Length: 464
Ligand SMILES: *Cc1c(COP(=O)(O)O)cnc(C)c1O
Image (tube, rainbow, N blue to C red; front, side, top):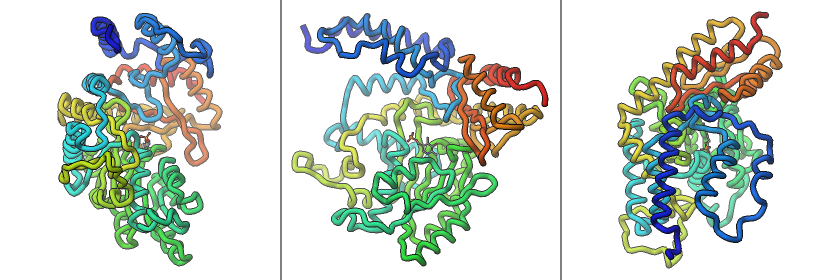
């Protein structure tokens, strides 16, 4: 009896699961996008203690279908329009399967050369597609939050290298916009910068960071004896996909000696399209940059691509090499020296499969189709006088509401969600409740948009 699952059992279960996945991907809309469950109902359906004796795979697989799936919100559903609509894809799913089978941990080059080198190669490919300079060193993290935390960490080390020995000292100030993702502030909190030293710069009437206000705030902080060290600009904010004026912000940072980090977690992949390349204007001047292939690049969660032109700063800040991890390949990059984590999943295989399978043309075509679906939908919403569009929609997100009091839009969204047929999200923008409709799922078609828009229109009050 082998210690692991017997190979013939593995083959049988794998065939069954593979067939199920193939059927699922052939019709990813066949289960409801939103589960009809209350908090705790799954927990109550599962034994509170783990089994003493092993169970047959059949039983586990049956419970996956009867318990887990009905409690799942299905991000691969073609009518998943919530948060940012993201999806995995066939090649990404296959890679994820192989990643688990090989179970490599690429802490350092020697721990598995393929992990390190494919990470370098795929991030170089992506960098070229995005038109970023070849001086950018790439590394992968799980999420943009962790990528951004490393950017702030590097910025802090450059501004105050003694942090490494003496610990964090107060007085360093970081700047981002009032519409920045919470990960910026969280990264600052985790690093001991302190909330009092995070400045949320006002946005203009298109929700873009006001670069003049940034310059004035930095000047005021310097006059008060504080030490501005980092600014984070967004290309595609989470609230509205606004694009901060990165060239102007870069000029301020260059003049004042601040590290500039660009957060393009969601919007970055758009720049693969030649007609959208200008969205990344100024990003080449950044000290670091993040985009998430697990958002709009059809790669299964998780994969965040982090780039910096100063990898040596991260290494100076973080490298600690115990004897058992010393190796004799001086030319190889050992990623453990550039980040907090030691262990490293073989995420690069997913990106390699996705980029090769679709090719640049295939990816451009899919993203372009999402932009067209978004533009067409936007004009339909604008044409219906019951609704108002609340922000420019340069990417794949529309923020809109019913005219009148917030309660009407809230009730509309509740009605739509109660049908279980589509999942959208909401936000409060300028004090008003808005629906966020995000389009970017690989499975979404015109028919999904039409059906959802019909659902919303018929659930909306017929007239004022
Ligand atoms: C989604 C998003 C993040 C956070 O991404 P995670 O990978 O979930 O940490 C940060 N910034 C922006 C602009 C985002 O859209």
